[in-house]
Length: 183
Image (cartoon, rainbow, N blue to C red):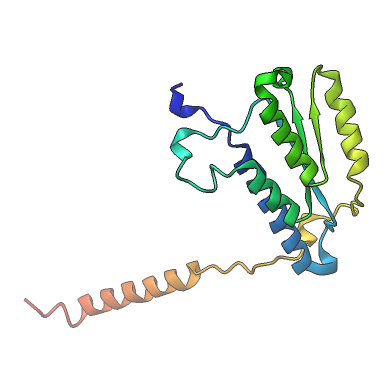
């Protein structure tokens, strides 16, 4: 792996996930009472062992090099909380305190929380805590075939083949009659 293969675009990951959640909310609104889910609030659990450090090749891409504060603001604007679990205990060292504080700030900004994991057993405890904070009612499972569709699927295969068959028949007919007499 070369240096250009490395990078941790945490801001982009937050933004992309928040966008997916927002799209799901919109789809739920379109389906109204037929939606199998009703998203009243949402949370993103970000598990990372790194710091915001996008790949150098992405520096000119405003989305892929999005700052953490921008991504957190997007999440906040869409009522999505961030729960940041950093599994790198060395982040607590003095040289990384600005990064640690930034991670804490984006979590708190979205009304979420920041957790610095020091031992593996903490993860399940923290996930239970987040699960208690993010309460939402899940409807009974629905058979996927009973779900309404947002878009109607249209196939143009039949008209295409019908047109091709008519043109082929016309060609055969012309070759058997009119085109047969031409030199």
